[in-house]
Amino acid sequence: MLGLNKNDLTLLVVVAVLTLFAPFILNPFPTDSAMAQFNAGYPDLMQRFIIFGIFAIGFNILFGLTGYLSFGHAAFLGVGSYAAVWMFKLLSYNVVPAIGLAIIMAGLFSVLIGYVSLRRSGIYFSILTLAFAQMSFALAYSVLSNPKFNLTNGETGLQVYPSDPQIFHGEGMQDFPHFFGIYMNSTHTMNVGAWSFDFNAGYYLCAIIMIAVFYLSVRIFRSPFGMMLRAIKSNQTRMSYTGLNPRPHTLAAFVISGMYAGLAGGLMAAMDPLAGAERMQWTASGEVVLMTILGGTGTLIGPVLGAGFIKYFENIFSKINDNILHQWFAFLPDGLEDFVVFIIHPFIGKGWHLTLGIMFMLVVIFLPGGLVEGGQRLGKWIKSRGKSKAAATTEPAE
Image (cartoon, rainbow, N blue to C red):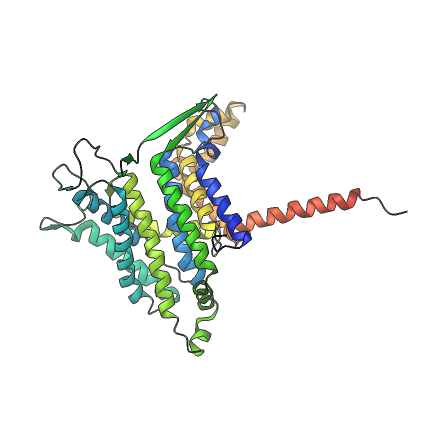
C-alpha cells in the first residue's frame, strides 16, 4: 500500500496517529493538578515539535544515509524564514506561496553551498558548511541590512509593516498568516472533565505536512537512490573505482536535505511572521545534529523522536525553579530539603543545557543507536521475559 512494505506502512501509521492525536497524548495530567506542568499540549510547543521534526528528518537524509556531517543547515532554515516573510510583505499572509518560496530559495542556496562543500569530505566538509553558515549569519545580521539594500532588517529581524505592498491582502482580513482564510493562531479548546485540550489550526497544518514529508523520506530510504547513498557512506572510494561518480548523488541528498530545512524555516515564519539572523547561527545547526544522534542516526523515526525529546525537556526543565523544587521536596526535613534543592538547582531553569548534555552523553555511551536502539532493547527484553515465564510455567511431560 502506498508503495510501502508492511513494516514501513505500520511506522507511517504510528507517526500519523501520534501526530494527529498529540493534543490528547501530550496532556496526560488534569489542568489544575500539580503535575500539569509536565503537560506539553500547548499549540506553540506542539508546533515546535513538528517543525524541528521536519528539520531533523531532512538532516537525516544527508547525515544518516551518506555520513556527511553538516554544521551549516541552520543557514537553510534562516533562508526559508526570510523568504516566507518576504512573501507576506509583498503578496499576502497566505502561507502557501510563502512556504513554496521558502523551499525553492533554500534549494537554490543549498545547490550553491553543496557544490562547493562537497568537493571535500569528512571533517573538511563539516568545517566548510560551518563556515558558510557563519558567513550567512553575518550577511543576514549586518551586510544585508544597510539602508540602501535592507533585505534582512539586521538585529531587529524581518517583519511585516502596514506600509508593505501586500497586493493580495484583502480588506477586513486579519494581519496574521492564514491558509486560505483559516488563521494559524485559531485554536479550539475542548474541556473534558478536569482536562483541557487545544486544537490549533497552525499545528494541524504542520502535522499534515510532516506526515507527507515523513512518507517521502521513507520512499527515499527504500529507493535505489537511497541504496546508492548508503553505498557512498559505506565505501565511497570503492564506488569511484567501479566507475560511479558519487558527487551528483551526494549533491542531490544535500539539496533535498536543504529543502527540508527551508520548509521548516517557512513553517516557522508561518506560525510567527518574523525572521531573525539568530536562526542561522551554528548553535541551531548543532541542535539538529543532537536531535538526529539522540533519536537514532540513519533510522526513519529516530530524528522525529530526538526532536520531540529535546524540545520537550527544553520546555519542562526550563520552567522548573527553586520554588517548585521546594514544593516537591517539602516532605523532607528542612536542612535536607535545602540541600537537595541546592544540588538540583544547576540543572533546571537556565541550566537545563547541563541536563541535556548529561542525557546526550549517556545516550552516546550506552545507546549508540539512540532512542530507537533503546526501544528495540526494551522490546527484546520484554519478549525474552515473556518467553522465560512461559518456559517456567510449562509442565514436564510424564
